[in-house]
Amino acid sequence: MPSAPATAAKARPARKLSWRQFRAILRKDIVMELRTFEMLTSMGLYTLLTLAIYAIALSASGNGFDVRLIAAGLLWLAFIFTSMLGLNRSLVHEKDQGCLEALLLSPVDRPVIFFAKAVGNLIFLLIVQVFTVPLFFLMFLSSHAIGGQFWMIPLSLLVGAVGVAGVGTLLATISVNTRGRDFILAVLFVPLMYPLLLAAVGATSAGVLGGQSYVADFWRDMALAGGYDVIMLLAAYGLYEFVIGA
Amino acid sequence: MTDATDTAVSAEGLTRVFGVRKALDCVDFALPVGGFLSIFGPNGAGKTTLLRALTTLQAPSSGTARVLGLDVVRDAVELRSHIGLISHNPLLYPDLSAEENLVFFSDMYGVEDVSGRVRDLLDAVELSHRRFDLVRTFSRGMLQRLSIARALLHRPEVLFLDEPYSGLDPHAMDILDSLIAQIRHEHTFVMVSHDLAKGLELCTHALILAKGKVARYDEKAYIDDTTFAAEYRSVVGLGVA
Image 1 (cartoon, rainbow over the protein chains, first blue to last red):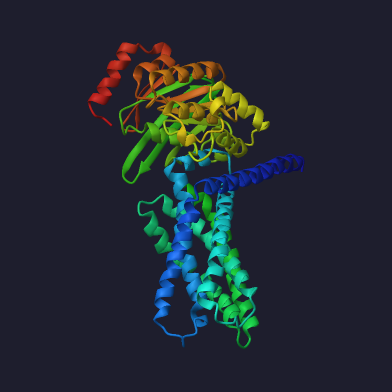
Image 2 (image 1 turned 120 degrees about the vertical axis):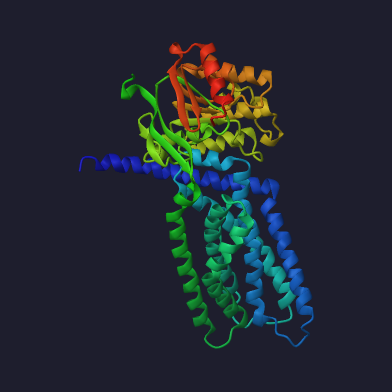
């Protein structure tokens, strides 16, 4: 076909430009966050408050209570609520400053904006996790031995964070165009995250608790969480053009 | 009547509905390449909606609009490379410096020789001395100048101006006038404005929008300023928006 080389030649620069646009959005988000610490400060403080509330609540349970039984759930609860706070901010600052319009005016494929925003959010979520997890272990699990294997915990948190960042970015984009943006994000986020939460808590729990067949349980839950990530990221990729233009 | 190939911006039956309200109702016009269209109308007449539709930010409910022959819906991504928007909102990141903002948007538009282009534009808008300063420290006039530099980065053929003089002091207005004059011959302009005198001074074509409909569209050559002003006042005065 005579037109094929021309089409291929046109596609290559387009891909190159998309990569350049992806890096530009990601770099811009990171530079602005490192300049203002808006997201990281709010997420970090919220995490600290949540851990402090856990400490008060668990102090009433006495020494006989094995915190490891609920450790994964507590960790993910803190993580989910903290991430909601940060995810909302990631799009709100674009919208409030009118910059979302400037972004939409540029010749960028909308999925490129999605992936750049999602990767940025993932980086910020991982930074919060890096501080939260050791603090959590220090506060609640320092006197308990890990039943499973330690590497399972960060791996399950990473796979879970990918889904949280991906779905969260999509939902934050939907909610940013609505009046009750904080409320809308919370209402949509938790039900949609439920399957991922179940799998991620299960996988983290396998790492913390150990027990019989914990390795098989871990990989089953990781497969579920990974599958969720892939399906939701593909769905977000397909829907983002419609969502951001709505 | 202009030939289709000479038409820079056109709309045919362009309609945009929000709920039960028609913000744009069968808007028709054609602006030739190199023209300067001033769009007037009272608040709520649909001026900004029309501009948003022409700049691909808002898809029309029905009808078509084309810029440089490209459909605003079907060819939106391609079209965005050829247009620039200067709004009363600067569309800049306050927590980035002037230079960082221009570099960011250069990357978004695939501009080549970024440092040279950014340096030239900062010189042109007389902001080179503030290139490393955060945009949040800029005055309204400086923001608008930087906004012009942002809009010109990718050398667009058509420039859309949404109330560009809004909130500017006389000195900043003079600078904006001078910048528009410098690039006037290279671009097609579409400007939304409340300032009748300024709009008529700059335009080659004028359009009055009321209640989402075109109340008048004419070439400047056929417009008598006094009659046009009276016509505009009657549209605004009757509260037809």
